[in-house]
Image (cartoon, rainbow, N blue to C red; front, side, top):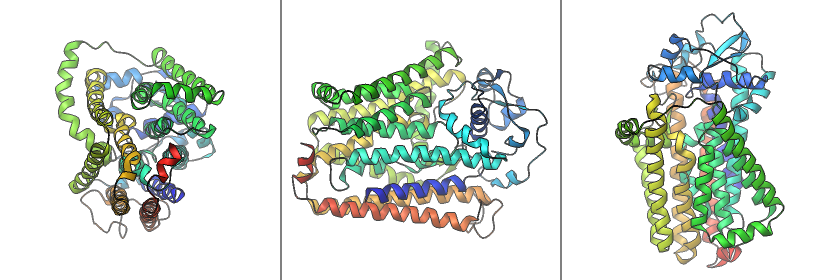
Length: 506
């Protein structure tokens, strides 16, 4: 049934890939140009200012414009692949994506600016290489999205497998169901480095939780840990920090002596994976130190930015659940309260069944997520004029629901089994409903604008390839598949005799 769970998520991601208008993801046109350049071997490009009219279109006003100029690079790109019109309705929730169809003249020059020019190139390499086979900008965008989606789906499958490795039933996945929000799935479908980062963060921490269980681990667990750690290290600048925090957390969660013994027994594969991840982390750090611009942040600037970062915390939380487009397309308020209720119930359940040490770690994870979010906003982004977005810290934020789910899993055999059957099945139904709601809200906005006709598929200003009906059905089938898979896993888990699950990991 875990295969069906992964299949349900894959269908949802595929529906997102096609139903999102070109350039409708945050910074997607700039990321697209970066990927095209990297795919043609141009890792950096030449420095140069970002045209002011383009900066205004994407909200890069001073002091953001000043910082964007420091990260902008001009790269060679065929005029036929220029993303003309992409993201034309950015920040305009009431406008559909129909403006994409009313493209202006294509550029005559061979150079285009991208304000993510100094970003690490590693996450852009494979999408950029495969996009070389496309002959139009729209086709190249789809190729890139599908490539990133496949990478992310592979990492999500890895997380599902790691959490259920050596276990029976669906209880080990209870935290993952909450962690994989509609925003999480959306990030898997757009051209950006955040999707691989958050999926790698999920998979890596799931692997560490599997490593912390009492049972022995096989080669496949080490390989999954190494692969996800590699992607996490080189996706975005903060990836190395998430890697370090995760490793520190697992030392608190598990017995360090047991972890070391497990590492030694797994040689040489564990050593090889540690070497790969370490080399990737050093590569990422070296790129940041050598290429990315740096700014001197004073204590006064941090203090001034801190109050605004505090005000932004509810917005960060909403963005982590599901705010789409260029962060101007929101779900109904009930959807956010529903997810928060599920998270609160998950944490409360873990608190009730956990040991005092596990409870302290739950508190630590909650505080750490808030503190790191504030620190990134006040010390790193605030002085540049930018603010924290939910996706920036999602690779860390997933650790709280994942760990809460793990605590429940390790204790669930002491609890009434029949109740778990209904609880897990109900959670699967609610999360699937949220996934479909998020997709439908965004599809409606892209088709007719946020205030347009509710039956948008009947008359839309913009429609994806093959029409809206196909992708609505696909998103619905994906959501139903999620529900069915979770219910089946819940039934299997409920039929497991007490002690049978923990016997596999004892």
